[in-house]
Amino acid sequence: MRLNSTRGAAESCAFLEAATGRAPRDGGLWLPAALPRFADVDALLALAFPERAEAILNRLLGDELAPAEVAGLVARAFTFPLRTVAIDGRVSAVELFHGPTRAFKDFGARFLAALLELIAAREGGGPARTVLAATSGDTGAAVADALRDRAGVRAAILYPRGRISPEQERQIAAPAGNLLALAVDGSFDDCQRLVRGALAEPGADARLIPANSINVARLLAQCLYYFEAVAALPTDARARAVIAVPSGNFGNLCAGMLARELGLPVRAFVAATNANDAVPEHLEGGQYRPRPAVATLSSAMDVGAPSNWERILALHGGELSRVRAGLRWARASDGDTGSAMRALLRGGYLCDPHGAVAWHGLIRRLRPGERGLFLATAHPSKLRGTVRALTGADPGPPPLPAGKPCATPLSPRPEALAEVLRAFAAG
Ligand SMILES: *Cc1c(COP(=O)(O)O)cnc(C)c1O
Image (cartoon, rainbow, N blue to C red; front, side):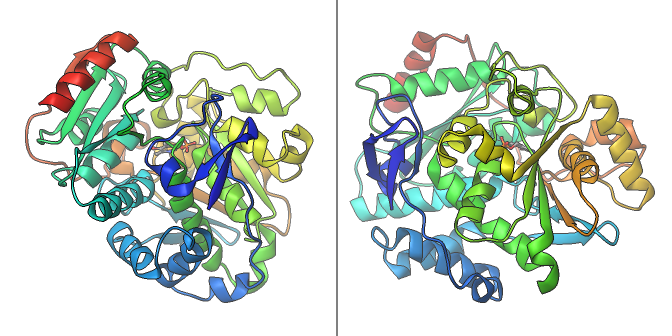
């Protein structure tokens, strides 16, 4: 699969190069140069998840990966189910949180880990690559779990100190020989800026790999669950599907839009944000104004400068009117989020704050006759304390790795990051 930069086709590369860290020199992000539009979507939707995932990935990556390699990736990455739960007659939750770290980030992280293993095996040795991740909580946990103690790959994970849950910190910073947890004195946006800077630096270590949704491998893995979500609908409801996506960095929504480009029937997406609403403001005709993130109950969506917005614009030829044509949006305050969680619980469904933001947006934007799906991106146990305080219900503890968290403090300066990475690579 060929990819072009969002800032122009002068920069282009192959999928595996992009997945292993090559970045466009013009500061943009990779996006498929051309996407096929599948003529046999109904037949694809009739397949089970693994067979459908193989079929789609073979079509997209067949020029770079053999069918047996694709089959191996799917088998190693997607080892957990997706469940659709009916909330009422017209709305269902799509639970993407049944992976090892209980958030949807497991899909992308496990696919990336399986891909890196495959590449290391093809290369037959050499110095280990380092996956570099900035996290608002869940990405880091998923990357740490997917890569923990794997041979030939390491990961350095940056998170904003004091702004993730204790459970997330334990998942990220549980000791492992090939993982380095960095507690940054700053926000998620600071972490993301540091990671982008380290990757883009002239002469940057070619063995550094981004694990954020700026990595196109993650987006591809995420496309696959949109197909599964629509496949779970009755055939006659598919053309009326509206999917609400709780959005922070907008990688998840971008993946859904890629799936729609591939031919998946989705009438509209709902971009559901918390108070970090740079994108809704832009969609409403305001300037696009990235800004510092504010802290909310749906902390994994506290992103003030969402990096995938550039991709979504580029995917629509840079025209906001084309983005708007298939997109609705809504924001939820913390008050709205708590009310949504309590309303869902009265109907018998315990939902985490991220999923609740999506449900809140969905029911406000769903029109008569449409079928609504909202993505439940984290298991309620991931933010157990918050869920308990807001609803009175206890989702129980999340599964956590053994060992006391052990993180290295980091000041939000590029030189500081460069220094710890040098020491990590040497150690
Ligand atoms: C990362 C995350 C989001 C936001 O996804 P983006 O792709 O960054 O928009 C939503 N919910 C949860 C639980 C997350 O971890």
